[in-house]
Length: 264
Image 1 (cartoon, helix red, strand yellow):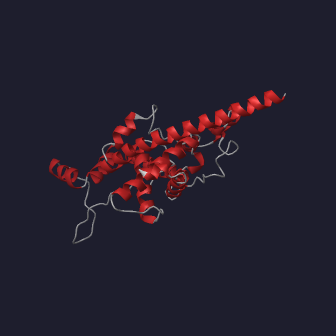
Image 2: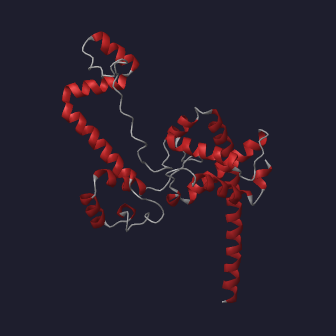
Image 3: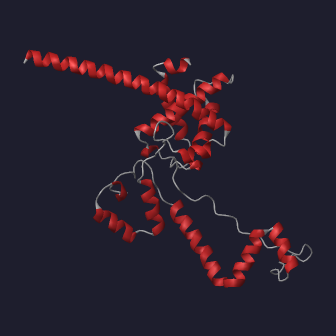
């Protein structure tokens, strides 16, 4: 595994992984910890090495490899890691009423078991809408309005590196007065969003603290599982390298301390 012995590959892999991460909509690169960056670098190294082993040599990080890394990041987030902002997607399309193909008049809500059974099989969303309207028409319409209003509030939030500080997001600090004021005056959905954003990105995939629950979810994908297995090898190698570097630095510091004490 020559890739592990290349001193420059570690930083190159981190740069490759971070470039891919920053291409994902809603990325939280401003909340990455050193440990999370290291994990992304390990996965980037594993991905590039596996591509080479598979005959897909793409060590320069061209868009093809980068797209694979983007896909991996999205899968990590979907499994439970907090890599991306929690924003709603496009609103769920409302069901469309069925129409008489001749007159174009909308068909009335189903009243008999036969019609309801057909809709339950063919268009369950439309049946659910009719049933909700029958149970509480005004309440259901108000619920739809509120859901769309909440979605638009979250979608309109501007949040990135410039906003990721205690002045804008008090949950990043320890000023309880500021936190209380924000919670009192902001809409609940905004408070929830900012609380989540205050959390650093956590990627415990390797080592003793790895998240076994999320790992179990990821293991269902053979390609991701293979990358994680290779990542463990890289993680151990890098840890050994870091340990050796730390020992050398400590020995050099001890030697410097002896010299200083001898010269005193």
